[in-house]
Amino acid sequence: MAPWISDDGLRVFVLLTLSIGGAAAFLAGRGLARGWRPLWRLFFYMALLAAAVRFFDYALFDGTLLSPYYYVVTYAVLVAAGLLGFRTMRTTQMVTQYYWLYERTSPLTWKDR
Image 1: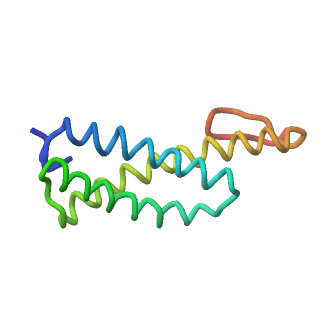
Image 2 (image 1 turned 180 degrees about the horizontal axis):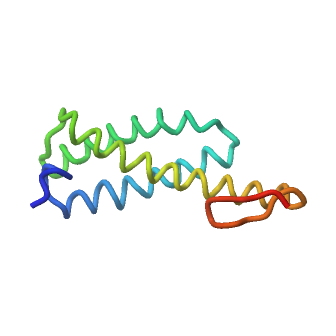
């Protein structure tokens, strides 16, 4: 169906990688930002989460466990979701805690007052 996205098809990719894995990555990014952790940790944690998502794909849907291509696709999707969560939380923190210095310009950016 969509062999360039997932070896099991588009439904499994949307359910497992986008819905479950993406939600976990988004929340992990928010958690890292909430604790004022550096951004580089996100890339390490998403590598671990991508391995877990690939394992669930293998265990639940009989997917390929050791496929570097599908691992990279999963990793890229999870990093994007994690970065989105990290940036939204960091923007909220900056405009809430330093309201006299910054104002929100969008959900992902802020500017000086």
